[in-house]
Structure formats: C-alpha cells, structure tokens
Amino acid sequence: MKNLKVNKINKPFFLNPEKDYLFDSIPIYFFPKKGSSVMGIDFIFDVDSTVLNTRSSLEISATNSFLNCGTNNFSEMELNSEIDSCGGYFSKSFNRRHFECSLHILSKSIKGIVPIISDCIFFPTFPHDVIKNKLKNKKKLFNISSIKVTEKAKTKFKEIIYGKDHPFGKRINLNDFDNLNSEDFKSTHSDICSFQIGGDKKTKNLNILISGDFPKNIKEILENNFPNSFQSSNFHEMKNIIINNPSSVYVSKKNALQTAFRIGRILPGHHHKDFFGLKILITILGGYFGSRLMKNIREEKGYTYGVGAFLITEEFYSELNIVTEAGSKHTKQVYSEIINEINSLRKSKVSINELERVKSYMLGNILHNCNGLFSQVSVFRDLKKHNSYFDYFSKLNLEINLISPEKIQYLAIKYLNIEDISFVACGPPEEKIW
Picture 1 (spheres, rainbow, N blue to C red):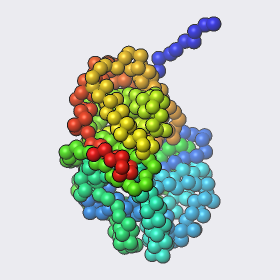
Picture 2: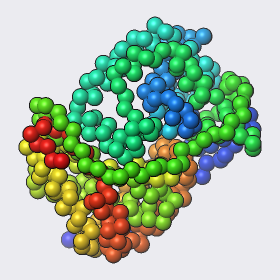
Picture 3: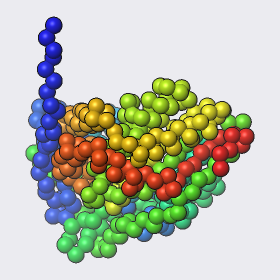
Picture 4: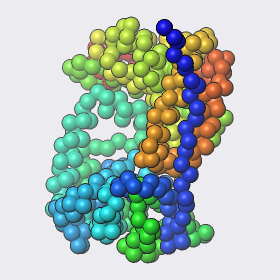
C-alpha cells in the first residue's frame, strides 16, 4: 500500500475588498460575489471610551438588542414581519467596544428592506411598554445565569484584571435593570449611532461591509435611505490598560456541584513582536483538542469534560483566559494540574513532533476560517475591530512556520510566570483553595 502524499499547508488567498465612502465620509468595503443571489450588510460602530465609562455595558447591550422594538413608522411586529417576508435575517450584538448590526438577505429584496433596516438602526423609538417587558425578561435570564459558578468566576476575573471601575470590570446588578428606561436608551443610541466625523471629514465610529451578490447601485440605495447628517467629534479610543496586581480569589457558592476556573492575565497586542508567538504558545497550552491541558485534565485524569485557553485580542493588548469547570471534589487537583502544565512549558522545550502537530492544526484552522466569501467577511470584520487587516494572517502564518521549541520556551518563561497570573475559582466553600 502506497503512503499518501502529505502536502504542506499554504497560506489562504484573501479577497481584497474595494473601499469607498458613503456621503464621502463613511468607509464602506465591498466583497462581491455575483450569482450567489444573497448578500450581507454589516454595520460596525466603535463605541467611544467616554460612552463606555459613563454608561453600563447593560445599557449599551440592551440598546443594541432593542433596536427593532419599534420606530415612528413601524411597530416591533411590523418590523420583524417585513424583514421575514423579504427572506432577511437581522442580527445585533455588542461586545466590549463594538456595537454591531448585520443583515443577510436575498439580493432581489434589498431595495425594499433598506428603508426598514435604516429605521431600525438610526431611528428606533424604544417604546416604553415594549422595553419594560423586555427588561423584565432580561432581568430574569440574568438572575438565572448570574448564580452559575461559571458566571461568578468570569465576573470576578474581569473585576480583578481590569478593576471595579473599568468598563470591562464593572459588575451588573439586578437593580440596574430597574433603573433603565426608554430615555436612557435613546440617549445611549444617540451617542453611538450618530455619524461622528473628525478633521478629515471621515466618520470615526462606523465601518460598513457589503458582501455577496449586491446590486451595482447599492451605494445609491444606502445614501437615499440613511440620514445625511454628521456631527463633529473627537473620538476617544480606549488605549490605556492599567495592569493590576495579580491575585487569587476563591468565590464560595453553597451546595455547588461544580467548580469553575477563570485564569489569566493581560498580554501584548497584535502590534507587539511577541504576539503571534504567544498565539502558538497558548494553542499548545489549551487552544485545541489535543492541547496539554485537554490531554492531562480531561483525557488522562477525567476531571472535566473540557478545558481551554485562548486570547481575546484588542487593538493595544490581549487577554489570556484559561477556562474550565470540573466536579467540585476535584477542585484542588485541577488547580494543581493547570499549574503543572504552565510550569512544564517554562521548564522544558516542546518536542518537534508536538510543535509540528500544532503548526499543522493552526495553519489548517486559518484555512477553515477563511473558506468562502462570508467566512472571509466575518474574519475581516473581526480584524477591523482591532484596527488590523488581512496581513495579520500573513504575519501569523510566517510565525507558525518559523517558530522553534526554543522560542516557545522563551515566551513561556517571559509571560507565563505563575506570580503574574490571576486565578479565580468558584465552588463550594469546603473546597476553598485560597
């Protein structure tokens, strides 16, 4: 039997979007694919740091989720019915610094749906009765999720990493839901979804992505339906992260059957020379199914169903998270094994076989995530959030191919010192570690 030929994984081909401007001010990126009969429009609003500091994440996220609750022209039911009848899917999300709206729809319906989507995004009324009921539902769901050990550990971890007064570290409390009303949402919406321009007359807070089989006059369709009004603004980016002293905290929860762990620290961002090497290091530690944490804690010890490590990337820094949830009787053992695996990377070099396996996984994952037009648009959208471009993957690809066991160990020694890492666990009081 002949051995199968194994080809080297090459870097993917990335589409090069054409860039233009709506009203000569709003950046718009085009990813065409004729003949597909479907198209997408993504709106990415950057949230000013002043807004993040003065308004809670609950207020901003609720403003985002309530956009289609009604306008002066349409009720909530009419809005949803119109979108559904056109074969459209309208989604919204808020994550830390970005307020997003996305529409995917049959290309032939785009002209009729744009006025409705424009109404949702730019002219919502946040009707009092509708908002009141939705806040009640959100409060109930939050009350259920907030008592889970995973959520308690995550909340405490963010508080430690960023500080109680930082937008990413502030807690949401149940009474916060009772203190919000329609006027709060209107004010928050005005601060985020207005066209804010700087001295170069270009918007500082909005990027639009158009993808798929869109009509030639899509720019004209958008300009005819979007508000043509701009306000001067000194947009403030969130650049400075104060790195707090690391700490270890155990959050007690009576009768908990599981213990949740959230472990990590602030690391350099994608502009730093060590960043792409750190991506590889964290993948070896816990970034895929064959990682060290998974093999030890799940496969060999059977303490947990899953454990992982990942980086949350922002423009000026990244955030390491090691996450797992295990049976409470294994709390101390899981903590010990996580420490062992971190120290192992610091004490000895990874083998060539292990490194090659991780390299193949990461290169294949890049290809998988960039397979197809809408996947590439999704990747581009995520890159835009931390002010990057497709050359991010060229740099990552190069680092994957060149990195050595010696460099992996060097990065582990430099960045994975246990004394620099914060540890949070939430479980029953009798299993308290610290």
